[in-house]
Image (cartoon, rainbow, N blue to C red; front, side, top):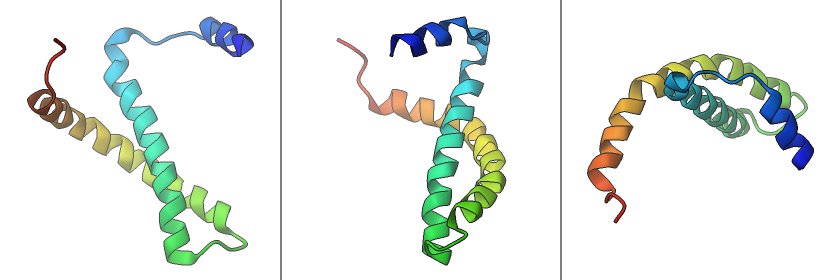
Length: 88
């Protein structure tokens, strides 16, 4: 585990001002992949070409999800601020 942390520390980092974009990228990527697995299984079943179909769906879903997360994030941040109590 420490080897992974050491290697991660050596990776170049993007400036903090891009945190919302990095968040949107990772959130969109993970959610698009999970949804692609589920939707392909529901629509076509889990068969011989399941993984190929998932990655085909993912290649179309990821850019859309990324744009959607970028657009929706400010609304979600505001909703969370309205519904979650600040730390005591």
